[in-house]
Image (cartoon, rainbow, N blue to C red; front, top):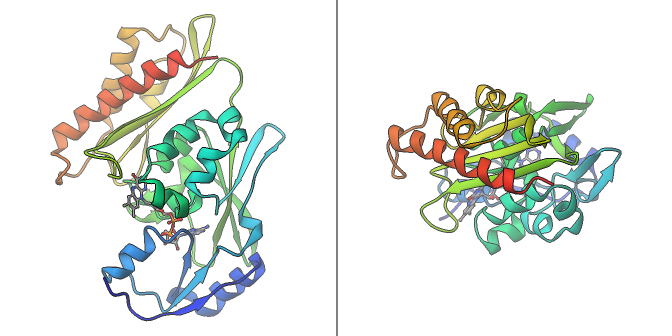
Length: 287
Ligand SMILES: Cc1cc2nc3c(=O)[nH]c(=O)nc-3n(C[C@H](O)[C@H](O)[C@H](O)COP(=O)(O)OP(=O)(O)OC[C@H]3O[C@@H](n4cnc5c(N)ncnc54)[C@H](O)[C@@H]3O)c2cc1C
């Protein structure tokens, strides 16, 4: 319950954040919504000497359409996603997932950038970002680089972020007409991390699947991008047989860890079920 003592910094612009990261190095941690970092500090799993609070940095907020993409500031909270008319209209999948994350209080604080940067396989945004083909903007003293969601998650709590870097923005292509999407999450209760979950985006033209992306939550050391499962759908109608086959291929890449949510076989079977449910729901949402 009692964290180690630390020094608190509240910069108001991105260059200040970068300078503070440079100054304090490994001793510093960025603080976003604080709903993963502070619980870890209270249990003394983390004990940074310096917290750099990102809440006053205006460059990290805001949702806008730029060309064919939606640009979302890393400090956008889950509730801001849920209440955004723009997100509801352009990326309904993002509203669907945010509604299934944590609870109202956590969603007023927790940010999309923090959920992704944390690198916890239990978090929900990582798989959804893979399914939506998102790109993350990472800024450091040496400039800006873009990293695809499918390249970002390296292991448990291990991401492409390097020391001194800040995630500033999430860029997501606005899906074309004929797209359907869904996130199916099995959890023990509201506010729990997934036992297994699946994010699905499909495109259907004249009854035939022309493109598909599937990703899985909490059944591996990172979110898993199910390429074979998605590829198996392309070129045919998404009927019962195709859905069952895609679920089987998704189960084949699962490598869950047994814990209080269940053993490996149960979690793998549930990942298959979540793929089936998400696919049926995505197809029903095609417009
Ligand atoms: C009761 C409870 C239930 C929850 N349930 C779920 C759930 O079902 N699904 C789910 O996905 N999450 C869940 N969470 C986690 C919650 O959504 C967190 O808020 C989220 O994981 C982290 O976001 P944050 O903004 O709070 O980040 P913080 O806790 O502030 O930071 C997390 C990590 O990311 C780093 N970081 C933050 N922002 C940036 C940035 N812009 N650039 C680089 N690094 C950054 C921090 O330094 C830190 O290491 C739950 C949390 C609680 C307390």
